[in-house]
Image (cartoon, rainbow over all chains, first blue to last red; front, side, top):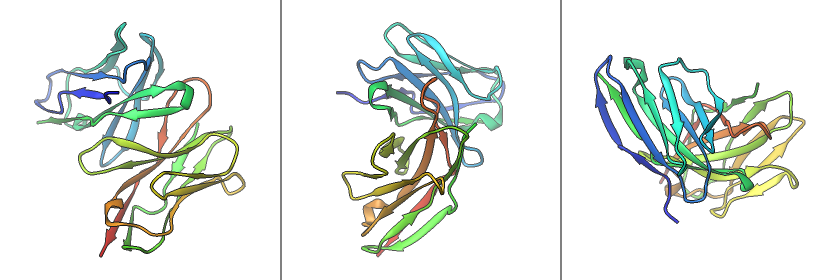
Length: 112
Length: 114
């Protein structure tokens, strides 16, 4: 089985721009979670989607949004980028019957 | 709400020596507990998990962790480390039911030296 795919792997943007990150979960998995990882704040939960519905949301401003498509692929969008949004964004594909989350390699976003 | 404390930010150890990475959690309800490992420039890999049952859980690469409810701890141990174990280790908790939100600790950098 193919693992979790995240695209792009690296991204450079400037302040004020917006960005869209993509995540393709493992075939058969219907849940996807997103996390932000920074040196200062560590790993923080952004949101979770199950069957195209947002099931949980972390404590991030409204500039951070996401969605899930019928094929379980998910996207997250960050609008009006700030320097502090520079981070590794990790997507996890969830096998619910085993309580296991499989993480992708992440998208490293640098905001200049 | 749940929280996780990893008391050591860095743990240096010589190859073939034993190691313990400490994890304490706080929660008003029962939780599931996890250890993840992150190698440089990679995502997180699940090392082991405690959901219920036996309080001692083991991974295929020699790590083990013991759930201690009274001390609210889930320390990770390995009797003999290898250079390839050098990585960052994250302890995480999740509340059963209601979704899959993980709350992570700040991580422990394990550095194995020759």
